[in-house]
Structure formats: structure tokens, C-alpha cells
Length: 205
Image (cartoon, rainbow, N blue to C red; front, top):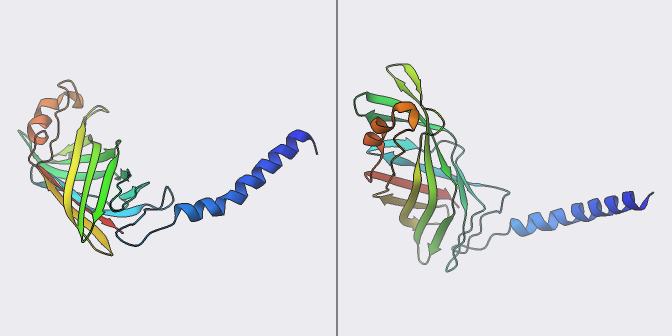
């Protein structure tokens, strides 16, 4: 065996040998409220909704929080993932429109569980992308720049052994540039941008 092959084989053995220890370390959980989410191994299910001007956009199945930690008194960052979704909204001048959307979390989050049962969350740099609209059964593409944000999700609530449930209101959605959304920016801004929005988030613990 050449020196190069020996070194490669040795490195592979050392890498494999560390895998169980790494997985075990990442999967450790403390007792509540010192709860640690599994780091990049297992996302924690997330449910709830983002209500835009009173029109609910439920978080789709498959939404989760990952790389996140919850502990008291320490607070650590985490990332949330939301699959594509739809929301039926009253768009000015068009009536009820079905919007094909997706929420993207590109910032960090702080998730705190405190004694005895207070829970809170802050999610920075959340973006709402609109892919297309369906108006009277006719699909209308909105381009790749129809992105509202950054949005700050801030919510408070309670936790128990099963889940943390939090609610927040007055969530501000910034407008998109006037040139965005295939010419529909002004129409969509008038219907979506603003602070008449709320969020409810439940994280399975």
C-alpha cells in the first residue's frame, strides 16, 4: 500500500470512528426547560400559520425547526424551513386570488423556554416569495423577484412537555420594489404590505 493510500484509509477510519460520537453528542437532550434540539440531524415539527391581512396561510406539513436550541436561561439560534404553500387573499382590484407562495427563513432565531412555562421566539430575516397567482382559474406568473421582506416574526406564549405554542401580532411586511412581480407590485403591495398581520407558531418538543 502506498503512503498516499495508507493516509487516505487512515483518514476514512478516523472519520467513521467519530460518527457515533458526533451523532450521540448532537442528539443529547436535557430535561425541560433545558431542551436541546438535535443539531442538523432531526428537525422539530412546526405548525401554525401566518395570517396576512386576516387571510390565513397555514404552515404546510413538513415545516420544521433545525439547528435550534432551547434552554433556560441560555438562548441559541436556529433555522426554520417551510415548504411551498398557498394563501387565498383579497387582492385589490382582482377580488379573491390564490397565491402560490413560500416562506424562507434566511436569518437566525432565538427560542427561549423559561420557568415556569413562558415561551418566546424571534425569527429574523423571514421572506415571503410569491411565485404566481391564480385569478378566476387563470394562472398569472409573478416572476422571480416578487419577494416581500425582511420580516421579523416575534411571538410569545407558553410551553409544556409536548410543545411550545406562541402567538404574535403587528407583524410588518415591507413592500416590494415597484418594478417587481411582473408589473403587479403596486397591486400586491396594497394588499399584502403593512402591519395587519399575525403569526402563530407551535414547535413540537
